[in-house]
Image (cartoon, rainbow, N blue to C red; front, top):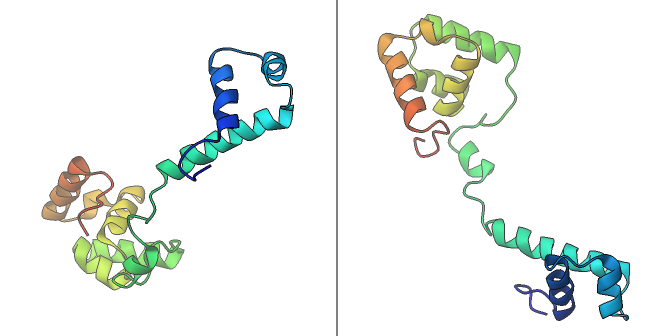
Length: 143
């Protein structure tokens, strides 16, 4: 069996299951099989299905992102939230705050939304936040 196709045994079992056959009917048709062989056929199909849906290389690596944003994906502390509140209150831009906190701009925007700080942003920053959120909620291509 190659890694990209089902074994003949698994194919035969799964075809019978797809046709509505019961375990007993499968075991009658293939007396050399056991219940465990039927379970193995299902596991083999699932393994093949999962291997075909998972990309071989992740779209990004956290280490690559952290080379630009040292604190990317770190848990937010109370001190981080306080510095964010202070920075927003001081009129800093999202980009300035991102640099200060060493995080991605998308993380800063998400936290601003979570902490209900949008109204404290400048009109321009509010407009940008709403524009980016409407275009791409994940903001994947922005940074």
